[in-house]
Image (cartoon, rainbow, N blue to C red; front, side, top):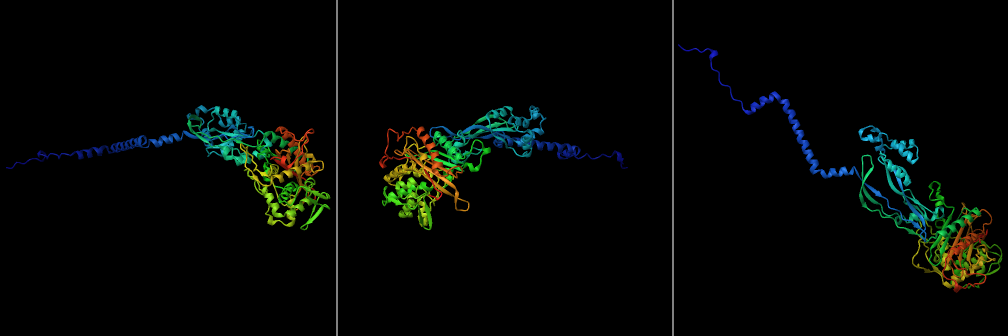
Amino acid sequence: MSRVIHPANQRRPAPMEKGALWRFLDWFGGCWRTVIVLGLFGVLALILVGRAVQLQVSEQGFYVQQGGDRQQRLQVIPAHRGMITDRNGDPLAISVPMAAVWVNPTELTRFYAARNTASARKYVDQDPIKTLASLLKIPDASLRSLVADNRSKQFIYVQRQVRPSVAAAIRAARLPGVGLQREYQRFYPTGDVTASLVGFTNIDDQGQAGLEASYNNYLAGVAGRRLILKDAYGHEVDDLGVQKEAQPGHDLVLSIDKRLQYLTYSELARGVAAHQAEYGSAVLMNVVTGEVLAMATVPSFNPNNRATMQPALTRNRALVDQFEPGSSMKPFTITAALESGRWQPDSTVNTAPGWVRIGGYTIRDHRNYGVLDLRGILEKSSNVGASHIGEDLGAEALWKNMRAFGFGQETGVGFPGEVAGRLENWRQWSVSGTAAHSYGYGLSVTTLQLAAAYAALANHGRYIHPSLLKRDAPPSYVQVAPAKDCDEVVSMLQSVVSPQGTAPKARIAGFQIAGKTGTSRMIGPDGAYSKDNYNTVFAGIAPASDPRLVLVVVVTDPQQGSYYAGDVAAPIFHGIMSGALRMLNIRPDNLPNEPAQVTAASVPPSSTTATGKKRAGGA
């Protein structure tokens, strides 16, 4: 009988063994969320470690530099501008240390926004704008408005050229967002006396006019640099050293003598005011060296007060204005006549009946002078006599003489805006134009040109280019006319200041003076010669027996009293030249107990001034 096994008693097969993978899957199925989170944290940790290694090793130099750049700053060290001095070392222009105050509107805006935070807690009681406004003595509201209107900017000037005492107070206050920058302010001790010559600088100490402009690069120097460390509020906390030293500008030594400049300016100003003239200019030169000892323009301006500065007054009229010289050109016509060999000092011209018609134009003298020799033509300032000489010489001879004495050319002093005057080529002259040139019409000159030409006349015909800078060596020269002819003309010019001449008011006691007047009509707006407006000129040489100085005085459009150069310009010449001869201790050559006779051989090189007296008829 077969054995029947109850199902309940049947033996079950043994379960199959699970591998490691299955066991892991079983475990993961129960805690998979935990595993994913831990894995993510692990990956993030690896990224952070890797980034730290990158920052600390491979990119360390870059970030060190970036950190330094946010705290270190290169600060410009302004170069001290060189002084301008007169020939004796007295200052005419100096730079005074000052400070510029600036703010960082962005930083100030951020400061006020976070004023009560921990980072700004030490400034909780501080109002930098109010404090700064108080120190600078400016309205608080205007400074707040300035900051608010420029809140996106990181630099804006508040005030320039602040006094050192105020700058020190601002620095001590340590105001957030407020900085100081060193700069210089130009100061002119002689003020309006030398303003038109020396010129002026702008607020950044850069030359804008006069010699300040023409010699700007020489005076300015080269700025330096230093490295500084700043805190989060922009305050300088450490000086890390100078990277480049500032190179100061060079000093400029002028040929001007400050004493003579004061004298020239004051006498010219007095004369211009007395005659209610439009303006005046004067140039005093050393005959032997060609140095300009004084150059003045009236009216002038005060370069230390820019608020009152008028552009028209900044012109140096001795160099940038030109005028028809009138009879002050007649000495050069006489020089050309002597040089031609056809005329001698005792040659005569019949000027009767006091007028002559040339090329359809009538040329007049003040009256009928009859027969005149060359000295008499200069003494009486005869237009008719000069015209006859010019007609005889011809245009080419006159033109060559004028060019040789520097007319129609710049003097070469290097002054900005200097004009060359006007002297057309002789081929363009008409017959009447040749006559007009002989007595100073038809051409234009500057005050300095005329002074340089008279200096050559006084210097035995040796033309020396004038200089506004002090000369330490004898200058070169060009022989532009025979010495004997020039000396003869200087001797003749002494008659002009005699009681019989046109300029007795130019006489100086104890000295022999040679000179010439010139009074020329001005050209009106319509292009025609005016009947009421004149240029008056006097050019003089002293002492005539041993020429040392030349002075040219030009007074434009006198309205009070006489308009003749002998009454307007000659007295100004007297005031300036008499003072200059005393200051320079020049020995008198015409003392009562020592009468001196001037001969051609006795007149050495000197500097001269020209002045001319022109009559209403244009003589």
